[in-house]
Image (tube, rainbow, N blue to C red; front, side, top):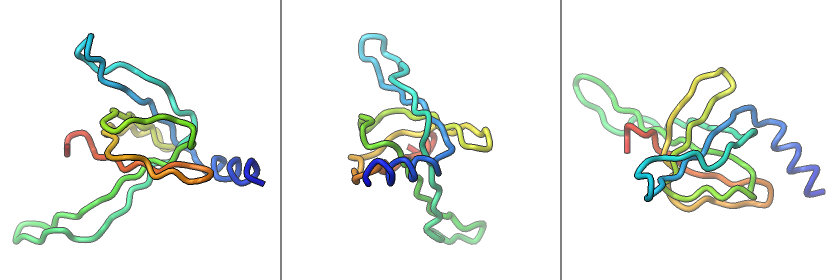
Length: 112
């Protein structure tokens, strides 16, 4: 039953990603591995700060991916969404691991 549920969940994932790690010898980011199936979820959390000029909306971004992937906190992730748009993120915190997937909070790289 586990394989059926795991495969069903992964069928819904249409995004892709590339995980980069910082190489201390090269002093630069290097590609670690590619993720062929994942899902990037953008969740608006409402207005975080209201000013006269505009409202600042707080947003949570979560990467859903296979449980067997080892994505370390601080990794750089370039996600390509199903519509072809690329986004660059930093992995934040320890992944929440479940039976069929893991969830990793992401930070937009220019917001870090």
